[in-house]
Structure formats: structure tokens, C-alpha cells
Image (cartoon, rainbow, N blue to C red; front, side, top):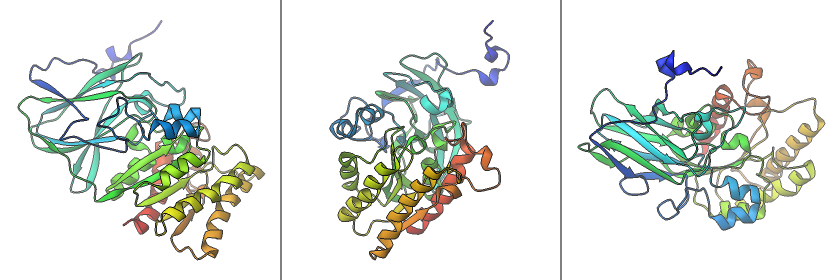
Length: 356
């Protein structure tokens, strides 16, 4: 017999409707809201990370995953005593090894003097089909600077923010580092399997350094295609993190594409800091893993030998560290929140040194 645990423990109940009589909804595509990490959000009918023609030219998979809103954020300031959302989602992603809050949820942070602190999650209800609504309350009406993170593995066509009708609504603070850090890689880069959006390693680094970012993690489909590499290399960015390893289908494919990614970026961005990372779930007893790591390290060494002084290498084996390493993943591959925090500490340390 199916049991509704929320009837036993009220803390597990998910708010999916509300009756506030002073609520007013706003479309986040309009001012004064500012959206980060998503492409041309004011004009596109569905939120996405890059133009459709680029994503589809890369592969069918990238064309589909482009609509996953990982890395998307909306910022605002308000004196409302509550904040509600109405999210429209064309499809709902359910993964066996990832929470619904991670794939499909929005989480809320309060920003104060460059420090962003988690408050609560707009928790998606089990069984939702085309989106959901949720509300979070504050203790008073003081002005708060807020960040809401979009889902990691879901499509979102529309997002509306509900506030008290009499509340002040203003533009949220900008990031200290306005040129975004650009990340490219696999499902791990996309955020699988963080428990909620704010726990991806990029989001953690963003809060550590108060920096904007763009997440081009494409689950199972980051294969270094020319179309997507050329597009990325033309973007305005502060740092490029090449977290590309896992999805290359073979060592030979990685050899063919990894060094090429570096050359294409360096040609367009002579002074850009570039960080190469090998996969975190490295197995020293797997010859293929050793070969793949050697390919990535070779790209770095070749760049150094050619006189490049703005390239950096992080051995993926170091990301989960040694003590408690076996507790850093959900399935032996995808990081949990502990794994992502350790990744953020190591990668964030390098980004902090090179970001401008």
C-alpha cells in the first residue's frame, strides 16, 4: 500500500498551491529581473543555453539537452514577506540516481555583501507533468537580494515570480566578476547528481568567488564537436574550464579533439586563462583511464612547451581527495553534494588565482 509520508511528517509536505490574496506575479524575462547563464532569454520562447542551430549542428543529443536550464539563475531584490514561483515545464526529467529537487527544482539563496547563502528550495511535487508552483516565506519584510537557481536537468518554458503586491521590487546586485567563467563537459559538468541546483560545483564556485558563469555540460554528449567549440570560443568569458574527458567515446577521439579545443580557444583568446581537468572518478587500475588522463595532460604540456603561460591542469584523481573518497559519488561516477563540494574547492582555488 502506498503511503503519504507528508501526512505523518509535515516537514516533508510540498507546497504546490497557495491562497495569498495580495500576490502579484511577474515574468522573469522582464525588467527588473536579470537572468544569468541562459541565452537570449528575453526573446526565446523556451529557456536555453545556446542558439538552436549551434546545438543541433553539434549533435541531436546536444540539441535536446540545450533546453536543460543548468547554470541558469535569476536575481532580484524585494521587500516581500514571501516569494512564490510558477514554472512551466514542457517535460519533466526523472532519473533513478538523482533527486527530483536536483533535476527539476529551483532553490533560493540570499545574497549579502558578495556572500550568497542557501535559504530554501522550491520543492517540485512528485508526479508533476508540466511544471509546478511553490512558495517560500520570510520572517519579515526587510529588503533582500535574492538568487534563484534553475533546474539542472529539466526544460523550462516560462517562470513567474510571485510577490506581495505592495512590496518593493528592484534589480538584484551584479556579480563581482561580471565576465562569466565558462565550463564545458559531461553530465558531471551539467550537475549530475547534485541534490539541488545550488550544489553543482559551478554554483558553489560562483558563491565562493561572487562570479558569473555559464554551464555547457551536456550529459553523455560533450564530444568536442567543432560547431560547439567554435561557438564557445567566441563568447565573452573570464576563464575557460575544459572539463572534457568522460564523453569522448574513445581514447582516439579524445586525442583528435582535446588539443584542437585548446588551439581553437587560444587562437580567439590569446590571454584567456584555460584550465584542463581530467575526470574525477579516475581508476588507476584501468589502462584506458590512464591513457585518457595522459591525453589531457599532454595538451597542457604541449601548451607550456609552446610558451603559453596561462594554462593550468587539474588531475581529476585529486578532486575527490583521499579521505572519504568512496563517499563522494552516487553511483561510482556522478558526484553527490560532498563530491561537488570537493571539486569546487580544488577547481575554485585555481579560478580564484587566475580570474580577472
